[in-house]
Image 1: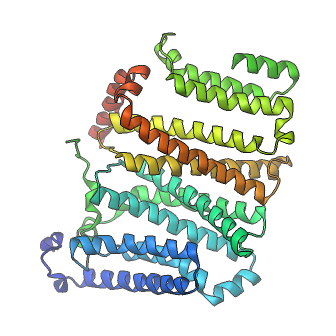
Image 2 (image 1 turned 30 degrees about the horizontal axis):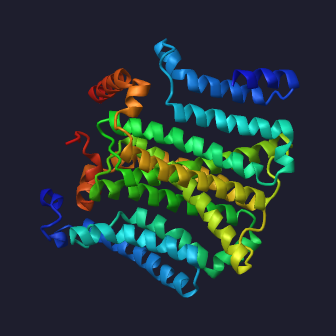
Length: 222
Length: 199
């Protein structure tokens, strides 16, 4: 398993676990991709922005490392794909009419994926730019990003309602509930992601070959 | 600020008193910490703290909040900018004095906008919670909340742009000199290395 640490030797076939994880990740990303195409055809501007940013965060490491196996961990990809999938699925629309707590669940799932985007930002900014953060700052960034993105999202929906005459935001209470769940999700994921990389087994981290960069603790200003 | 606190006490507007005292305490923190009255916050920052408080109190005092439609927006912009500036100061200090943290200017701008928005959202949530729990009437309507958020974002954007300019053109050591954080940073560094040693 030692040579799994160098992604550029394309010997992925010899590591079944790595192939399996990458496949799971690709499937999740396909969901994300087709959902994005769907909302694009529907001209659902906000969700197009969401889908494109999530997709670019997904594709960036694969393209720059030129290794399709450098895909994000599948659970992260799944979290990215989930809210947009819930958004377009007809079953979910019916449930949100029938079941009282379904909207809250959707808000929470949305918050989870927003915080995931924040988390990926912290990682990929470290990989590809001069930005450096420590653990606490990253966790804070994740929580802050979730709250702020949610706020901007609501502003966008509000503007959309005003311009296109839709009624996505029926009441103040609706918005506040959504933002409240965003905060809950953001704080949860901030705490989770602060220990996520630490908790991941050394073996898996090296198999993924992607986010070990974040773990360099002896980084010094050059 | 002290005057506002006294005026609040006399006129029975007790909600002003903690706000004024907090603002006073905030701007006096460096002096208190170093036990040296000569150390002050940068003038611009102190001015912003006073301005935000002043507009709020004047608004409450003279009924501008109710009479002038855009008064609420004005105070939202000023207080959001204040939050953004405070965030900027903290983040710039972190960038300067923590080895593990480096934040290029473009990222700082993004951070400030997001930070201000996050605080704005948190503020609205607190208002909502307050309304629910105590039956107060802070949030009038959806439109009101959204316009608040819009002006929060606006304030954040202004400060992000101004802060970017400021960092680019003001002398680099300005924050550090005025606040005299050199010694503090040494202490922070000590604490960090101690923590690392423990792991």
